[in-house]
Image (cartoon, rainbow, N blue to C red; front, side, top):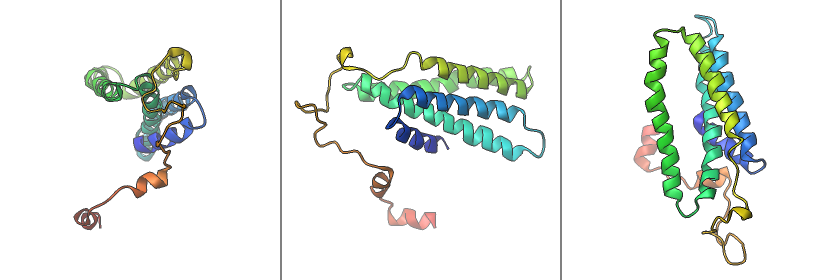
Length: 178
């Protein structure tokens, strides 16, 4: 569902700004964590799968795919470095907070931890909307892809169907999938 969140957020970014996409992501992240904390045992395991596994992951996908094009717009001449730094920060977050949250679980009930994480992460994403914005012409960001007339040249916008049609699956892989 992280990937589905990425796809949906990409489509949403064509029609709205990154702040709104982040707000949707924050609601999903907080709702997934907090909602999971109120699931009752043992019958609500499926509810935890849906709220934590699907809704929270989709919210993280919204946030990730919301920040990625914004970040690369700020650094068009250093796209690889910008994206690599972003990806590294996601990994570092898990590296730092994973053991910390695991330690907290030993002294605090998991439901309380889930509510706290939902509130903290939701608020952090919402607060980040105050700082994140696309560059404007006044920011003097260089245009590395555009032509002198301001057009995008040969860059074409592909929809999801066009992108999926480019995927080539080899015959041995097709056999493994069957």
